[in-house]
Image (tube, rainbow, N blue to C red; front, side):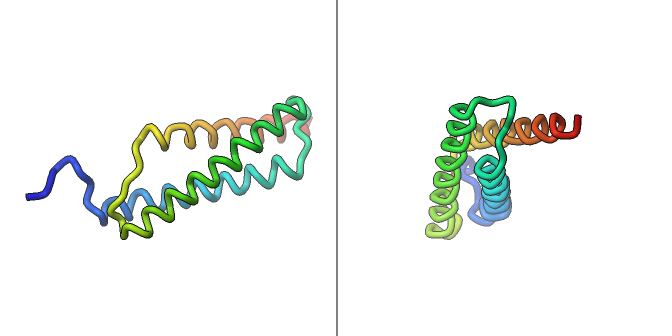
Amino acid sequence: MQNSNLPEPELLKTVLQPLLEDFQYWFARSHDFLESERVGFMSQQEQSNLLLRVKQAQEEVKTAKMLLTATNGQAGIEMQALMPWHHLVTECWNVAMRSRQERET
C-alpha cells in the first residue's frame, strides 16, 4: 500500500515541473535585467549581491529540475527549498517595478 503522505509522480510532474519552469523564466528575466540595467535606488554592491543570489537560485532550480527529470517525477522538493525562491522572485519583481516607476517619473 502506498504512503498517502507521498505525492503521486504524475501530480509532482503536473505541479512541480511548471513551477520550476516559472522560476527559471523569472530568474532569467531578473538576471538579464540586473546585468543590463543600472538600478538607481540600489548601490552597486546591493545590485551585485541580488544578481549573485539570482544566479545561485538559477543553479538550484536547474538542479531541482534535473533531479525531477532524472527520477521520472519520483523526487519532490521541500517547501523550505521553494520559499526562498518565491521570496527572491518577489524581491526581483519589486526592484523591477520600482525601477520602472522611477524611470517614468
